[in-house]
Amino acid sequence: MAQEVRGVVAHAKGEPVSIETIVVPDPGPGEAVVAVQACGVCHTDLHYREGAINDDFPFLLGHEAAGRVESVGAGVTGVQPGDFVILNWRAVCGECRACRKGKPWYCFDTHNATQKMSLSDGTELSPALGIGAFAEKTLVAAGQATKVDDRARPEAAGLLGCGVMAGYGAATYTGGIERGDTVAVFGCGGVGCAAIAGASLAGARKVIAVDLDPKKLELARTFGATDAVDASAGDPVEAVRALTDGFGADVCIEAVGHPEVLRQAFFARDLAGTVVQVGVPNPTMTMPDIPMIEFFGRGGALKPSWYGDCLPTRDFPMLIDLYLSGRFDLDAFVTETIALDEVEAAFHKMERGEVLRSVVTI
Ligand SMILES: NC(=O)c1ccc[n+]([C@@H]2O[C@H](COP(=O)([O-])OP(=O)(O)OC[C@H]3O[C@@H](n4cnc5c(N)ncnc54)[C@H](O)[C@@H]3O)[C@@H](O)[C@H]2O)c1
Ligand SMILES: [Zn+2]
Ligand SMILES: [Zn+2]
View 1: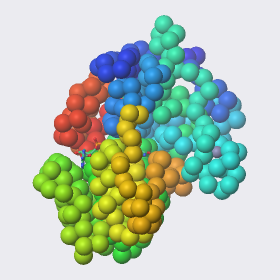
View 2 (view 1 turned 90 degrees about the horizontal axis):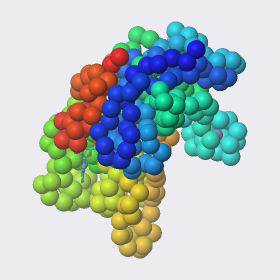
View 3 (view 1 turned 120 degrees about the vertical axis):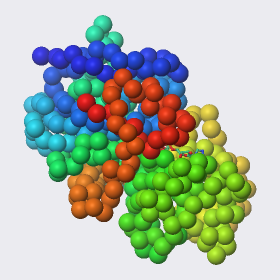
View 4 (view 1 turned 90 degrees about the vertical axis):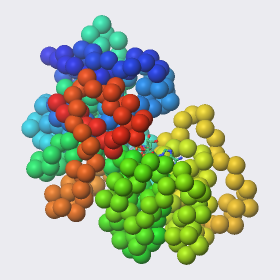
């Protein structure tokens, strides 16, 4: 029987979110209902409620979550009731042209639940990134639930579901950072700090954190940044060059989502270096005005990073093992735990730069 639970809904562009009763259907074929234990507040949730992703209001927000599988539908073999899982927005299809080419991390037809969750008056909800986990329970495609070691704290584990995975993967997979590389990360929120941690784990010899906020720069050091650049105090391009023998970094990661920051990342990079764009721009932004001769003349690569080119089945259990063995400090991303009805306040804290992650616990 369908269940009624509480969830956080964004009804209209820019309007504060509210707690609503939502209807979660029983899982159909290939689906699972997950009892959410924790869900992080990601900047992408705020992008949704600001209408910057699309106009499919009302949204059921939340997508960085961990919980227990409550029930599964017909044909589900990957997870079973009781499993501790992290939710993901890349349940690969195995059949699209990317999957067939052996590049499933680009999957163009990822699975979401077929049935819809709704408000109690029947209005269908659009779950953020096909997840919708600021809710006591949520309905997903079973492939969106990845089983991991249940000794991990849900508040920490859930963060792998989006921002931390995206940042870690932007550094290690998209950026291909190797031992000895020099790296600059622009924007040290949850995503940027995860990129810093990833760069550090990959053996980068220099990891330069760039942010406008001194508090974020301090945090970045705890994740492995070797140097910090306050972008409000001068030209960050010059500062990164000065820290890299005048050459620029091998890999520059844009983790803000702003044309000016992309421009800085472009010019702060060494010849033949890589720029990774992991920050999400809004639809009105255009590419920075960069002379084409600079694009050609500098060589290397400009690479957008969708979800850090991750594969949840490969990466979540691996990163949880690194966490449990003390080598990847997921706990350090959790600034505070909050209740479901504090998500709106958490957005404001995020805007004021007060948190790395507020995490809803249920
Ligand atoms: N590509 C993906 O798959 C993916 C996944 C998750 C999140 N994201 C995106 O990554 C971005 C960062 O997310 P977050 O959760 O870390 O956000 P956040 O708000 O926690 O962090 C952003 C950081 O950027 C800093 N910043 C802002 N303007 C800056 C500037 N001009 N120069 C330097 N630093 C600046 C802020 O001080 C803050 O520390 C967002 O755009 C989010 O939507 C992308
Ligand atoms: Zn596919
Ligand atoms: Zn996210």
